[in-house]
Amino acid sequence: MKNTDKLFELAQVDAVLVISDKNRMYFTGFASTFGYLVLLKNNKNVFITDPRYFEMAQTLKDDGVEVMQIANGISGMSTVLSILKDNGVKTVGFEDTELTVAEFEGIKTSLSSFQLVPCGQSINFVRAFKDEQEISYIKKAQAATDAAFAQVLKVIKAGMTEKELAVELEYLLAKNGGEGLAFDTIIASGVNSSKPHAHPTDKVIENGDPVTMDFGARYHGYCADMTRTVFVGDPSAELRKIYNVVLMAQCNGITNAYCGMGGRELDSYCREVIKANGYEQYFTHSTGHSLGIDIHEEPRASMLSKDILQANQLITCEPGIYIPNVGGVRIEDLLLITEDGIIDLTSSDKNIIIL
Image (cartoon, rainbow, N blue to C red; front, side):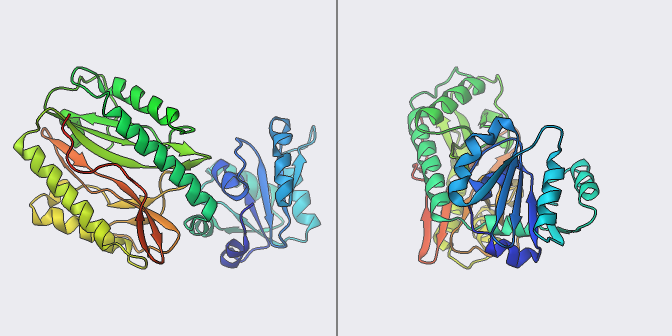
């Protein structure tokens, strides 16, 4: 069970009601598709669920979490209401960044006697800092991702389709210890590689094509993320130049990254290299994001970012150049920020690979 002291310091409430799957998972480490987690300022935490999860959830008792099963004929929110009243709660934080309008209206109706306080941003802030266990899970997810990349290089060939390559890559992620996908795998070859988030298609990979692969394993619920662009046969002079510029941009960002820098500053270190080489208009997205249970978390590295990169946070560094009807290149590493410097968790080769 995660320590909630910082959350209550930020949110300034008596209790926090957590109903989203990912935030229940974050605070308890227990994955489920249904349940109510009531966090109380007095460090008494209650997990309410139905018979599908009740027996498995007993493990939470080891962390001091009370586990309750919803009684027949009684709604989950009625149980939540009783807990809040029994503990003298007056202010209740809720996940304003996660709820649908219908979910919020239901909470507002059920908890009409309490003051409801939005605390989604406070939860996101707390989640931005990873503890040792979270970092270990992410490292294992990234190790599986790196291993899959090394092995898929032996599989990629002209004549196979993007969809076929995606299937092979996803199999290798699982074979190397991944427990699921961090996100939908991106495979983009040839002219499709100019589309940053292209879905795998029936397009056949041809000789001379760039093949951009953006993918990641999941381990114990935590994500990895990396991108590599390789070439099947000799690339054109233009694509080779684009690759070298993106590599220089990414290396400039990583080399100059440090604990305490702004997300905007990291973005600028990458963007200035691309601009200096005449490709500014073709770098169409931000430089990076954090990850964890979600593939995109705070902090961010972009031209508009106001985030400060702090110790025990993560950030990707993934500049790219995308030219319609020509192709594109993206290179992405996952960085761990520490007080002593930056650790690149991605071990895969970044020098140009021609298969």
